[in-house]
Length: 138
Image 1 (tube, helix red, strand yellow):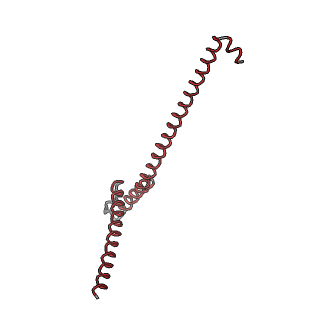
Image 2: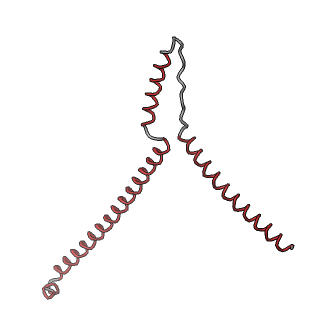
Image 3: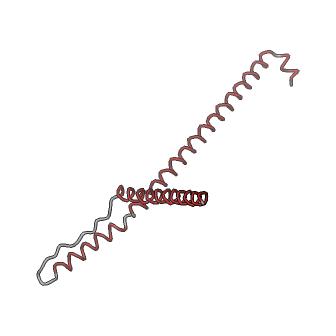
């Protein structure tokens, strides 16, 4: 085959051009594959972070079940309040803290535990230093 290529310079140019185009197409396909992989990876990361955020927010807010129960409880209290000797009592509303309030409470609880742990360690260090001081003074 190479014998024929070397005899005909036009055929040789066409084969070289064909090889060049083939390499260019392979390069483009590889680049497209890499870009697609990056886009899919980013989409999975974004989707996972959105799902995680949804689960965290729904765990803090307690979901929608509490709201339905709350409405039913309000209706039941209103019916029982009207039926007592003509005296109308206003139903007591138990307000649940907001999402930001719940987050703040949890952060405060964790900070309190952390500060108490640090105070405990410092107290142990102080007691150990006093114990060593008493032993050396004897």
